[in-house]
Image (cartoon, rainbow, N blue to C red; front, top):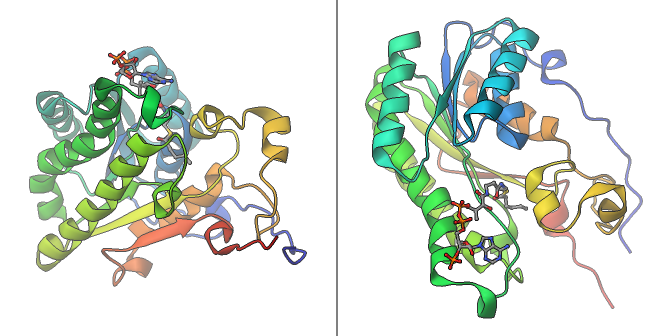
Amino acid sequence: MAPKAHITPVVDSTSVFKDGLFDGKVLFCTGGGSGICKDMTRAVMRHGADAIIVGRNLERLKASAEELSKGTGRRCLPVQGDVRQPKAVQEAVAKAVEAFGRIDFVICGAAGNFLAPISGLSENAFRTVIEIDTLGTYNTIKATLPHVRVSKGSYIHVSATLHYKGTPYQIHVSAAKAAVDAISAVLAVEEGPHGIRSNVIAPGPIGGTEGMDRLGTKGADGLQNIRGIPAGRVGDVRDISNTTVFLFSDAASFITGHVIVVDGGNEHLRTFG
Ligand code: HXC
């Protein structure tokens, strides 16, 4: 049985980090219209950065950009684009630079997921997730890199923990996220001499997100099934956002090429019986 945990409340990043930490900086975030990436964007904006959020659903992006701007007092530009298309990402980058003049931070967050056994997964379904997660990450890096070199900026890739073991019904995402982890490491090593950092955040079970819903844990009843997380609770999007602010800040200036697992200790839990 897991030891009884002391439950630490989730804190808002403003109470831990300096308000003007990212004044004058610009964030480019794919998948920023919803879920974890939207809250990561909110946290970076809250500390002074302007942002561009890229996704496929323009209506949702517009609503999110308005909400993020109102809540933080910073500018947020919504741009429709599919990360699978290099040209779409290049155009989004051009719009970001035209609007804000620079790109300092990049979050590669656009992702796709659903549960499917190998036997029921078509070649196209497998390819679709690889193209969104892996090729989309590559396309985003290629398009942003010239600007991030100028600013000596930093990348965060949103991965997962499910590929550390054989997670059923997740062959497509497991393959895609393992590749994302590898891409980030190579980026860190190649671009380190240019002053660029690249890290991965691997969220564990984060409540209230589309990713969790799609893995069959929708609502309070579903979350009851996630037992024994050492931290004593399910994760919150703010847990990922706080890690984001830290990794983009100078406090993390010697941290690059790493995967930061944010899962309340879940990966270390071994149960007997
Ligand atoms: C089996 C499925 C399927 C399912 C789609 N497909 N859903 N196969 N089971 N549930 C198949 C389709 O039949 C098709 O194959 C192929 O996948 C492409 O489907 P489309 O709908 O045409 O693709 P598209 O419109 O591009 O949609 C992509 C998507 C979709 C991934 C399928 O779900 C999506 O856009 N999701 C984005 C939002 C999302 O998933 N967010 C959660 C990310 S969370 P055929 O052979 O029929 O042509 C996340 C974190 C994971 O990634 C870790 C959590 C812990």
